[in-house]
Length: 330
Ligand SMILES: [Zn+2]
Image 1 (cartoon, helix red, strand yellow):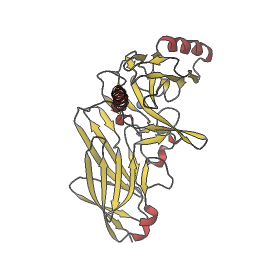
Image 2 (cartoon, rainbow, N blue to C red):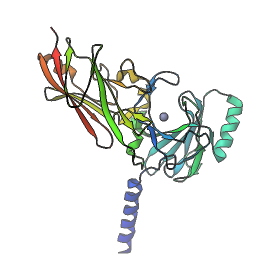
Image 3 (cartoon, protein in one colour):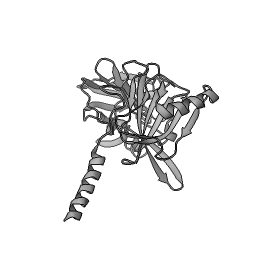
Image 4 (cartoon, helix red, strand yellow):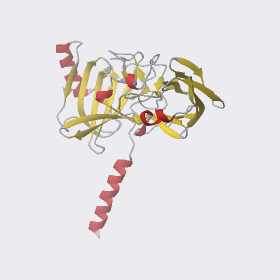
């Protein structure tokens, strides 16, 4: 009987550990950017692989560990990330990342300072032995700043997973909003504003059917975003295109591999920047956010007039549908 109780207690605590969500890195803060956004800042265009939390524009605001774990590595002077802490969480087998920091804390800060005195402002990575510098959930691990590509002080937060693929290790960055204990309280507006077909632009309205001409193969791009409160704009989590009742193309920003970070032009079209997202509804190459790409099969079946639907979804379950007709030009 005693054994049974112990086994159930162990099982319960395992279930508990996994149902626990990550603590946001900044206390009582709010989201300012989402996963997968286009960034033309830093050294070259790239995907935004984290979610950003406000540090109330302050440098030196405390940054907290998302869960129990240990310091895995730090980066100093990274062009995009600036000063960064990576924590490993054995209970989850996940890494959390905290970037644009002004300073670290305790022993990590001492080690960082001695490295900085040698490398100056060039990039450096310091790896720590497993389990050496332990942190507990909510502990202050560093202080906010604007190092790297940050224009305003804030905290960039990521969740990473390392997967083995043969002999190679693949690092996958996941949408941290899936893991973090965060409730969005501000009003949200998910919206597709314009659609582009072979360089001609058309306004989109929700209660209206928009006719879009195309030549041999429609090369469409949609300008879409979600506004949250007064000063936050994020990219929609999912964008789908259905033509003649068939799903032709779908993008979902749920995961991006680190080696895909510098290929945002596979997803984003001309005119995209940190505030504007032109999302292409076609691609000739593959990266993780492209979930469906059936243009090769569908192109031959297109008629003169093709009813279509553009569907936007956010991570909180909001869905917006825009009705289109793709009209073949003679
Ligand atoms: Zn960020």
